[in-house]
Image (cartoon, rainbow, N blue to C red):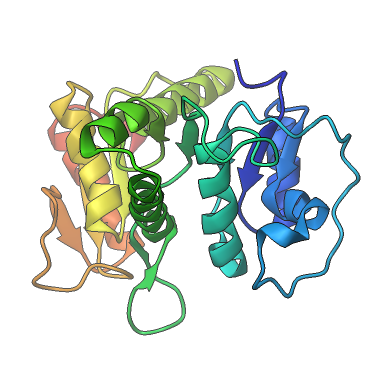
Length: 261
């Protein structure tokens, strides 16, 4: 259980990430920028002089790492400090501990779409970069490939799309909402999204696990014509068209009573 002991958390916006961690029950969550404010020498290239909350000094040994959101402008210090904590739960006391603490990521999207015409890197880029640098750091400390594999096994945990637990959580929340409103329990679920690698792959993974899902891919973001659709059930131009297709498909397949449409 990671909730009682101190955990290192990362992501932007800083205040929101602090709030989310505390709301989830992590009473001793320390944001990596607050930790860095306490130990500025850990990032020799840092220019951020902002001071974080004065957490008790005994919050120096971390039981795990939670990457709540994209690191944003914190990308470099997030790589350095998280690597330090993965090497040793108390980097002030030792450079390398016998075991790695677990790390949890809320999302693994390599790409996402914003105002620019082309896709931008998302949290998945941070996950990949961190893993690469961490393993290179372990190799520099003399660990073999076999020792690195054993050290990291079961310690890197990724949630969010396209992982099946994310789809199952969505099912659970929708069923709770339907019950609270007195509606019929949903018999089928649809993932509407613009990212084949996360949105559509998530629906496909859930279907492969025996869950009742279809993916509806929209041409409003990451996906471009000619890209792999990741087994999307249909490709449409807009969210409005997605809703129309869902209603038609749901009625034809018996998932939605015709009178409810």
